[in-house]
Amino acid sequence: MTGTPTMYPTVLYGDAPAAIKQLTEAFGFTVGAKYETEDGTVLHAELSYGNGTVMLGSKGRGGLFDEAMGDAGPAGVYVVVEDADAHFRRAELAGVEILMPPTDQDYGSRDYMARDIEGNIWSFGTYAPGGAGA
Picture 1 (cartoon, rainbow, N blue to C red):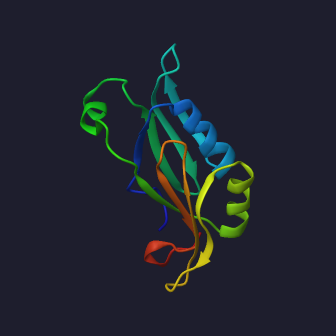
Picture 2 (picture 1 turned 180 degrees about the horizontal axis):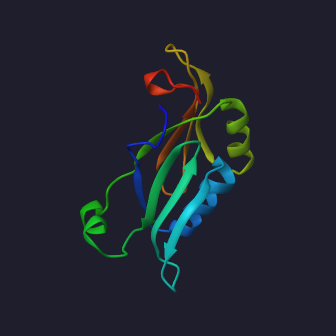
Picture 3 (picture 1 turned 30 degrees about the horizontal axis):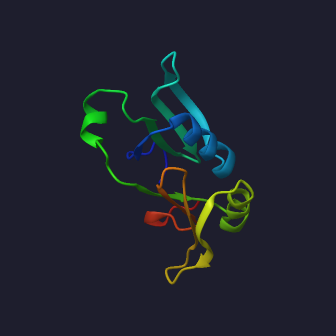
């Protein structure tokens, strides 16, 4: 896929600042935007990896989306990386809960799976839907 992505996973966190810290330090995301209140409530943040972006915010901040999400369970997000083993080592060193170490898949990918501080499942691997490379 080239150009701007057309899908953006969106996740709400009870402690969005801590989630942003984990996603940037352990998984290598970069913060593209962050809007927060004076008390640190994250109204909206955009974290990118490659040409993909996840949008996130704080639970309990109010508004229709927050209400609609309610106590929605964990989300699962897949991120394409060039080197799953190197990415895994970074996450492991940061103390992330690893659910599956780097594993070769039948469909040609090498993936690992981790759980973030609020139970969301993040998979990182070399498979790119549609045949696009990392």
